[in-house]
Length: 284
Image 1 (cartoon, rainbow, N blue to C red):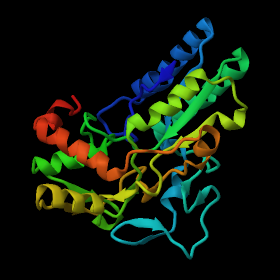
Image 2: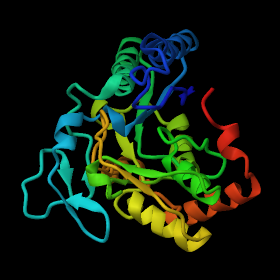
Image 3: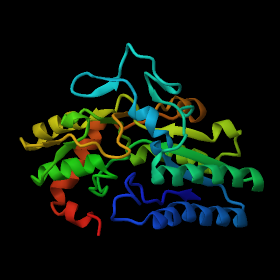
């Protein structure tokens, strides 16, 4: 069974628009229901988790420098354990705070592993970077690549929030179809050792892009469009998040296949074909 359901916004439950209780009931309660189903039917379980299980304070305090209009870990500074040139590894701290959303996913991970041990079920936890592709909802808090491209094309207001208002904050990018090969392997895999059940899956440093670089891509594809600056920091924002998928390569022989420019081209084609996508996918 594949658990890909969640309210995936780091602001969920604290933005005044969504209920914290509903967030927990949906994300964590939904996982418990699926684990109970797996227990009853002796089925394996795959949880699509998130990079947001990693501790926010050390990520927010990460020493960074600006190179080519994007943050990267400062080469001359000592980095916290679990962060290296390839990104944030599974060994990085998951200590609170991780946001309410991150806490629901981290707790779901712990429960899944406990169910696996208690009831002898194959359990796999895939911590994913930013997923992006055509047809993704254009939501600033969930689908930033789709949101940015659709908003730029529709000439809607955009702004760089926090970090000086420069748009240097960086995320990696992964097409969902690149997960399919590893999911197929996991569906057929036996129970693994505990240390091998949790792995990062992301586009890695090769896919990483700042908002400013994304704006440069949009300007070349769609023409110029102003982006405002808002230096006000937001809760849970971090300057740089790139996942290290070295473990996934070792355990599953997995590597991402779709480069970021191809993902952006796909989103752009969808945006042109669906000019009302932002309204259709907007929150109620």
